[in-house]
Length: 150
Image (cartoon, rainbow, N blue to C red; front, side):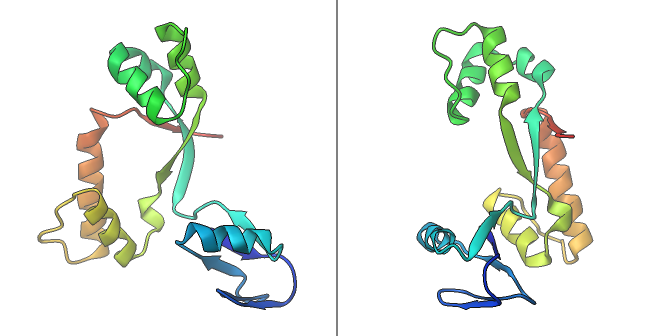
């Protein structure tokens, strides 16, 4: 989780930050919350994500069971809503997807491992990016299309 120093010239505690290097990243939710509550930091979106919305036309093509499961996973209440209302509610919800083009080599490898992408034969960042993009293209048939906010 990404934080930026906003108060003082430096901070030296569970993390180190300075005016010259104000950005810090923490994985522990408790540390993240404590740093925010200190008043020295502000939360920033992860630099490796793009926010967008699921495509309503694609959502409309899903069967109701899949659509309701997706809505539930996203925390959208479907109680008393017909399919068109569920599509509209899900399409309205912002979603974040990783922007793999901005990831470093070790981050790409971790992303691939987390998503079960086999990197056998991939030795360079370009070949890993290509393999991940091929995987994403194959998965796009089973997932909604993300339209960037703008």
